Amino acid sequence: MKKILVLFVLLNSFWVYACKCNQQSFGENFAQNDFIGEIEILKTYNISSKKNDDERFYKADIKILKLYKGKSISSIIIKGKVGEIFGSACEIEVKKGDRILIYLNSKDNFEMSSCTYTKILSDKRIDAERKALDFLIKNKIRNTDSFYFSGDYFKKYKKLKPQNDFAVYRLKINSKSKIESMITLQSFGLPQEKEIINDIKKNFVMSRGFMEEIKNEEIILVLFFNDESEDVISNFNM
Image (cartoon, rainbow, N blue to C red):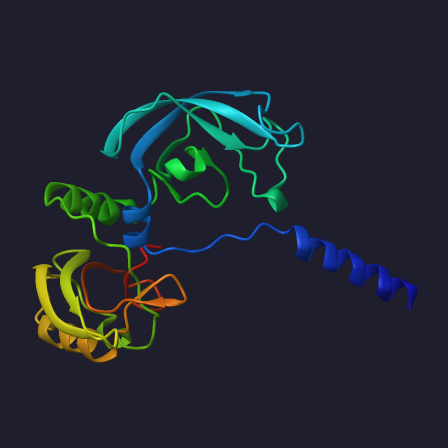
């Protein structure tokens, strides 16, 4: 009985202190973050916290390889201590030579944690994300702060080979959070494009966050085609 009680306490402690991150779609990440760029870590070193002695941060000097959004920066603050990372506290380790695509928010003082959306530059899915970022920047698109709940709508397209890995649509949302009209800004380049659009119109209920449905608004929706994912077509580029 004592062993069971000890195990319960340990599991309960882990649950209380475990790091929890909110997963966001590509569109949400693009709209809500003020700095998006590909960077290389040049140097990492510990720093003292100016807020609280219990807070743990270190610093990384960076080189910007490509800037998609925001102003150029020369360093970032990271949760943790060099060589001493507590994953349960959302701390993360980066090292000299790491090359990553990173999204940072000014509301968080451009601080990086394990919840920060990043992708290593060697990731095979980064090409689609790079192209999508270039498309949004080139066309001065901002209002992508939306997502939908996934379903089984697109599994029937699994073995298709699109010309483009991503598609972009301008949607007009009605008072019931349903799509009233839809304009294609970039298609997947598939013969089944009309069928895909009909599936979107029929099934999607657009939201902002998990509690707020979008009503009477025009938004931009970015979708990715990934034959290896369960959803096949999604606004998450995983």
